[in-house]
Amino acid sequence: MPRSSALSRVGVYAVLLLYCGGSVGAFLWMVSLSLKSNTEFISTDPLALPQEPSLANYGSAWVTAGVGEFFVNTMVVTFFAVGISVAVSALAAYVLGRVEFRLRGVVLFGFTAGLMVPGFLILCRSTS
Image (cartoon, rainbow, N blue to C red; front, top):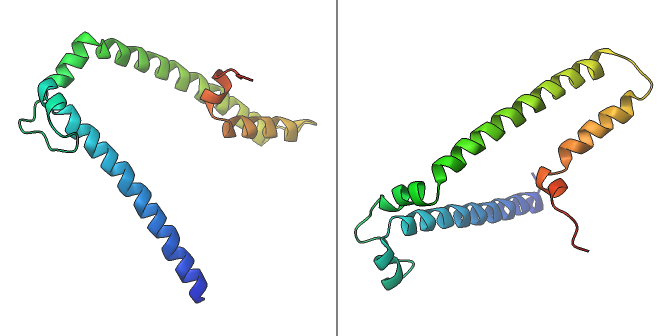
Protein backbone atom coordinates (compact mmCIF):
# COMPACT_ATOMS: atom_id res chain seq x y z
CA MET A 1 0.00 0.00 0.00
CA PRO A 2 1.47 3.39 -0.98
CA ARG A 3 2.26 5.81 1.83
CA SER A 4 -0.07 8.53 0.51
CA SER A 5 -2.97 6.09 0.44
CA ALA A 6 -2.35 5.07 4.05
CA LEU A 7 -2.17 8.74 5.12
CA SER A 8 -5.39 9.60 3.34
CA ARG A 9 -7.09 6.61 4.97
CA VAL A 10 -5.91 7.79 8.41
CA GLY A 11 -7.24 11.27 7.61
CA VAL A 12 -10.63 9.89 6.59
CA TYR A 13 -10.85 7.80 9.76
CA ALA A 14 -9.87 10.82 11.86
CA VAL A 15 -12.64 12.93 10.33
CA LEU A 16 -15.17 10.13 10.81
CA LEU A 17 -14.06 9.64 14.41
CA LEU A 18 -14.48 13.37 15.11
CA TYR A 19 -17.93 13.35 13.54
CA CYS A 20 -19.02 10.30 15.56
CA GLY A 21 -17.61 11.80 18.74
CA GLY A 22 -19.51 15.03 18.16
CA SER A 23 -22.75 13.15 17.48
CA VAL A 24 -22.43 10.92 20.54
CA GLY A 25 -21.39 13.90 22.68
CA ALA A 26 -24.43 15.92 21.60
CA PHE A 27 -26.71 12.97 22.36
CA LEU A 28 -25.20 12.46 25.82
CA TRP A 29 -25.53 16.19 26.53
CA MET A 30 -29.20 16.08 25.52
CA VAL A 31 -29.84 13.10 27.84
CA SER A 32 -27.97 14.86 30.66
CA LEU A 33 -30.10 18.00 30.26
CA SER A 34 -33.30 15.96 30.16
CA LEU A 35 -32.49 14.46 33.56
CA LYS A 36 -32.28 17.89 35.26
CA SER A 37 -35.19 19.58 37.02
CA ASN A 38 -36.35 22.98 35.76
CA THR A 39 -34.67 24.89 38.59
CA GLU A 40 -31.43 22.96 38.17
CA PHE A 41 -31.55 23.53 34.43
CA ILE A 42 -31.86 27.29 34.88
CA SER A 43 -29.46 27.75 37.82
CA THR A 44 -26.50 25.49 36.90
CA ASP A 45 -23.96 25.30 34.13
CA PRO A 46 -25.43 23.64 31.00
CA LEU A 47 -22.40 21.34 30.76
CA ALA A 48 -22.65 20.16 34.39
CA LEU A 49 -24.02 16.71 35.14
CA PRO A 50 -27.38 16.58 36.94
CA GLN A 51 -27.01 16.65 40.73
CA GLU A 52 -30.24 14.70 41.29
CA PRO A 53 -31.19 12.85 38.08
CA SER A 54 -34.95 12.57 37.62
CA LEU A 55 -37.14 10.91 35.01
CA ALA A 56 -40.08 13.19 35.88
CA ASN A 57 -39.51 15.30 32.75
CA TYR A 58 -40.30 12.30 30.54
CA GLY A 59 -43.60 11.65 32.33
CA SER A 60 -44.48 15.32 32.15
CA ALA A 61 -43.74 15.48 28.42
CA TRP A 62 -45.78 12.32 27.84
CA VAL A 63 -48.86 13.80 29.54
CA THR A 64 -48.77 17.57 28.94
CA ALA A 65 -47.31 17.61 25.43
CA GLY A 66 -49.38 14.68 24.19
CA VAL A 67 -46.41 12.53 23.22
CA GLY A 68 -48.53 9.37 23.59
CA GLU A 69 -51.02 10.60 20.98
CA PHE A 70 -48.21 11.62 18.64
CA PHE A 71 -46.65 8.18 19.07
CA VAL A 72 -49.90 6.41 18.12
CA ASN A 73 -50.36 8.72 15.10
CA THR A 74 -46.80 7.98 13.99
CA MET A 75 -47.38 4.23 14.27
CA VAL A 76 -50.59 4.40 12.19
CA VAL A 77 -49.01 6.53 9.44
CA THR A 78 -45.88 4.35 9.36
CA PHE A 79 -47.92 1.14 9.16
CA PHE A 80 -49.91 2.31 6.14
CA ALA A 81 -46.96 4.02 4.42
CA VAL A 82 -44.77 0.92 4.69
CA GLY A 83 -47.62 -1.36 3.62
CA ILE A 84 -48.40 0.67 0.50
CA SER A 85 -44.70 1.07 -0.33
CA VAL A 86 -44.03 -2.67 -0.03
CA ALA A 87 -47.10 -3.57 -2.10
CA VAL A 88 -46.25 -1.15 -4.92
CA SER A 89 -42.55 -2.06 -4.87
CA ALA A 90 -43.24 -5.81 -4.95
CA LEU A 91 -45.61 -5.52 -7.89
CA ALA A 92 -43.25 -3.21 -9.78
CA ALA A 93 -40.25 -5.44 -9.07
CA TYR A 94 -42.06 -8.49 -10.40
CA VAL A 95 -43.10 -6.74 -13.62
CA LEU A 96 -39.70 -5.13 -14.16
CA GLY A 97 -37.92 -8.43 -13.51
CA ARG A 98 -40.11 -10.76 -15.56
CA VAL A 99 -41.83 -8.83 -18.33
CA GLU A 100 -40.03 -7.37 -21.35
CA PHE A 101 -41.63 -4.18 -22.70
CA ARG A 102 -40.50 -1.15 -24.64
CA LEU A 103 -40.31 1.46 -21.86
CA ARG A 104 -38.89 -0.88 -19.24
CA GLY A 105 -35.67 1.14 -18.89
CA VAL A 106 -37.58 4.42 -18.49
CA VAL A 107 -39.83 2.94 -15.78
CA LEU A 108 -36.86 1.41 -13.97
CA PHE A 109 -35.04 4.75 -14.14
CA GLY A 110 -38.12 6.49 -12.73
CA PHE A 111 -38.29 4.11 -9.76
CA THR A 112 -34.56 4.40 -9.13
CA ALA A 113 -34.63 8.21 -9.36
CA GLY A 114 -37.59 8.28 -6.97
CA LEU A 115 -35.61 6.32 -4.40
CA MET A 116 -32.77 8.83 -4.57
CA VAL A 117 -34.94 11.87 -3.77
CA PRO A 118 -35.64 12.37 -0.05
CA GLY A 119 -39.35 12.36 0.74
CA PHE A 120 -39.29 15.60 2.73
CA LEU A 121 -37.80 17.38 -0.27
CA ILE A 122 -40.90 16.54 -2.29
CA LEU A 123 -43.18 17.91 0.45
CA CYS A 124 -41.31 21.19 0.90
CA ARG A 125 -42.40 23.94 -1.42
CA SER A 126 -39.94 26.18 -3.14
CA THR A 127 -39.41 29.60 -1.54
CA SER A 128 -37.91 31.30 -4.59
